[in-house]
Image 1: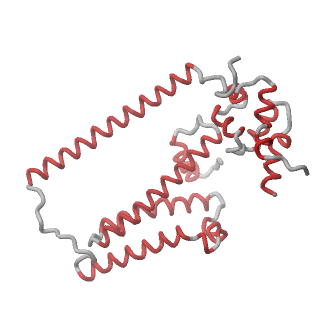
Image 2: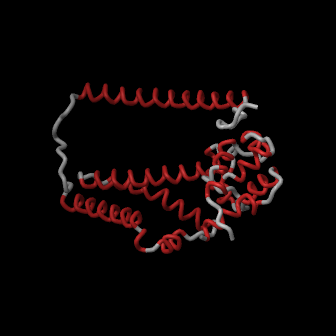
Image 3: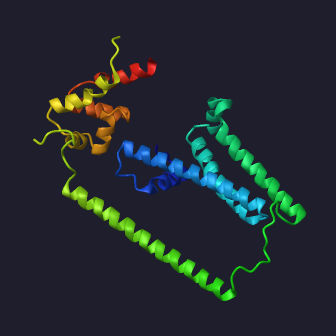
Length: 188
Length: 77
């Protein structure tokens, strides 16, 4: 759907950065589904992470995770409304017996906020995590930090190279031509 | 309306394509989609858009109703 609004055009461009311009309609649908799956997975992981860290006595970490968890939801609602779809109305159409995911998300947010409130009020988490114990020496900690940073950088470079090689492989296969025969059809 | 079994009805595109001596890849090229999409349509795993249905029907020299009408019968059953 193309509109003249700058915001809508920007949102559309953001949607199309996934490289699906060359895809046909089924491939685009599958990519969209996989994006929704990834967003749901991220949302639940962030909510559970927020609850766990809040119970352990953290305040800023769960707050950041809650913001990250809510971002896909708010952006989805914003996008839907701009295209004339009301997500809450869709939720209402599903009926009470199928509101499990919404109840789970809302409940987790409430519990996280309660745990954060407890931490702020009492000065410690529901499940106190010992902080005074030194597990590693300063030197070892520094080496571990450097190793982690270098490992992450090397992993990122390797990831980019792997993606580039995979794309090149597909291009070569496309140039060579797909097998032009159904697997169950006799050779012509 | 006569009941058409799922296996029979899903084979319509396949049978028509074969009768015109087209491979899945050739049909895919003619209607500008990937071969996997033709496979999914033939297996009944994917319902194409109106435009793609029209393109496939035109390519196989038949009607959308003939190719996909049974899917509507199935959902209404």
